[in-house]
Amino acid sequence: MSTVLPSAHPTFVSQLPADPDASNRCRTVEHAAYSWVTPCATKATQIICCNHNLAAQLGFNEQATQSQEFADLVSGNLHDPSIKPYAMNYGGHQFGQWAGQLGDGRAINLGQYQLLDSQQQVTLQLKGAGKTPYSRRGDGMAVLRSSIREYLCSEAMYHLGIPTTRALTLTLTGEQVIRDKLYDGHAAYEPCAIVARVSPSFLRFGSLQLPGSRGDLDTLKQTLDYCIKHDYASLIPESGIIDKAVYLAWFESLCERTAQLIVEWMRVGFVHGVLNTDNMSLIGETIDYGPYGWIDNFDLDWTPNTSDAGEKRYRFGQQAYIGQWNLFQLANTIYPLINEAEPLQAIFNNYNHLYNEKWLKMMREKLGIAQHTDLNESTLKESDKQLCTDLETVLSTINTDMTLFYRCLADYPTSACPQNSQQLQAHFAICFYNQQEVTGDYLQQLSEWLIRYQKRLKLTVQDDQQRKIQMDAINPCYILRNFQVQEAIELAEQGDYSRVLTLAELLKTPYQQQDKYQQFEMKRPDWATNKFGCSALSCSS
Image (cartoon, rainbow, N blue to C red):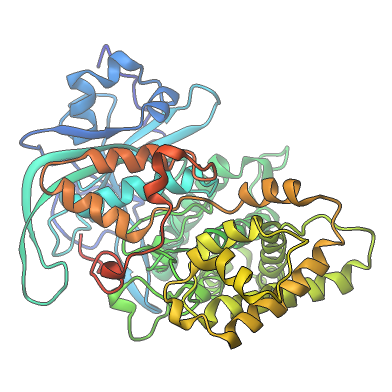
């Protein structure tokens, strides 16, 4: 046992059924929630980024994070009897089709660690640490570019206040693997890296779907009961019995968390890119940062995933529907534990209402109209919803940067004259990608919307300064723009990690304008419009 590092707890593996076959070969695994595995030894460990605040919460002090034992831990090289590595077994729907068994093909869990400031346990997981029984035809490795994207985006989401897995470290392994990142037959060697990531739970919708699809009700019940005991303990009655009523309360809570999560994505312009059911968290977190992207110019039809370019199943504006579709699959999975369709259907049917209520609340906050006088709420709600949807039409009419627009809107005075086209164009000029699109007709459309907006602002109880404070607290100044992370990746592939570290620091305070980071307050440059990594990504990693 390490004398420097805190010990891991085998909570997950002690309470759920294990795969009795300990061989690390790809195979079908039944009646088991996980398989025992051993991370692949790395050639040369080099920690590029370490999240020291998160490390401290996990009990890794400064001495620990600077030790060789810590480097060995986050690269999979530490042999400690308190660590019992395992890969989780789950299935899922991929692009709307049932894919059967999937599982942790390149993620290896090291166990649970206790957060110092609470009684909560979280799981430490290595992504890219080698083959598992679920790797199928893969090698279990992750390349540097996708690992940088995961590290930066998960931390960016956390500091934006959005539920997410966390990143502890980003570590080079000294290995190289062949990848065809464009799937065009031009494969090349790329450096490998490991992200040590942290979450209270890495259970997914597919963790229940797989045993459910096989009629393995014992494993289904054990897994769901484990989830409820550890992540929804407040739902368990004093008797301690988890029954049908608890399952229904759990599903209702998960529907609420999922709706809230997707509303938060819409708030900041995040597109997950691959919302398969195996990438949906049972605790309502953002999980698995693959071909994600951030909206530059507002476009509800945009998807960052090249594999989804035709159907656009996972496009920005359809994420709420996909959340509902995935919840429907989950409802079917847990039905045998409840044996009543009506209460499940009632909860599921409420999802749209729940999402729309949360979406409108979020949009009111983005526009600074959350506070209002004692008018009829139902009437005001309908007019506010129309105001918000009409704004989406305005933003979609020409290529308008979503992030910059809302920051400019916070600075737009209630006393300004929207009919003054020259002043209007000058105020919002930074938001437009093509000034030639800013025609008189467009400015008229924007002006008419702003007149309605100013009229609505008069119903609030705050002045312009208060409104700006409120709006700037929910509309970020900085997001992880696709071209900026691509620039960081290209430098890192040349051995320069300075931009990765700069972005990691910048994104800790995304709502606060920072003079030293003015260069990052910019819309996507023309050269990045159609460049791979800036406009679209594949699932290759």
